[in-house]
Length: 257
Image 1 (cartoon, rainbow, N blue to C red):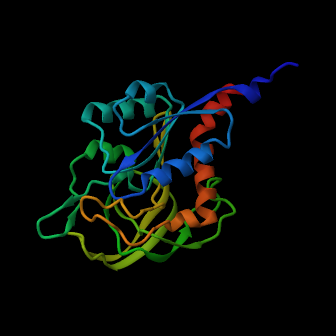
Image 2: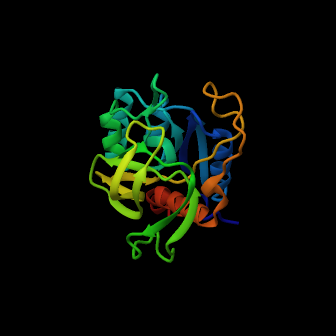
Image 3: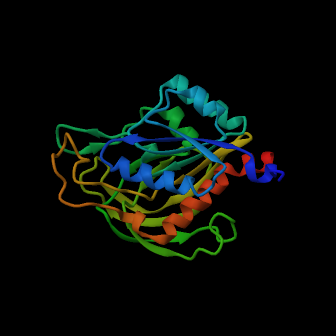
């Protein structure tokens, strides 16, 4: 029996899953289960960006983090890797920097501009978790083709745009975001799913996907009374995750076919 390279070409992925205020164990496991659906994927898992050799040798990168910021050298290496053809599927809080002030408010300072410019946005604020509508902004794009506008319960991310991005899903928000320094927002559309081209590679960012268990707010709180799963309970979210992983791995699939 002859093995077909189309079926056996290995594709290497790095998954970075780590950070504060989220059930990272849950998100890591769910993402690994999705990656395991393709037997060609071989995955290395890390908690930060320090193993740049592994990232640079990978075909694609997936991140689910909150307050995990690479050093400037690592930021520059990431940009170079992307420009040379790497693809990065960034999820939820990857673009977040949070500082809890003595006043009790949360600030989101601009302390990693190179990193955020590579990602294309920086998290600024969100209202309390609740239901909201997500609009398909570019229905003809393959990443969202066939998906209709949908309602989801999640953190409604409001972001500052740091570079040119191609918005595929978005929301409109006007109102207050209690607890944040920036707590007043005029009517504006904010991206939920977008693509950013960088040289031969690029970034795909999906802001949905909050999750939190009972013990994930330490040291702010010893016990959180609820288990939040948000978009992880929505089938359309898993469809977006699968499409995103297919996009991230597409160049490697083409090379190995």
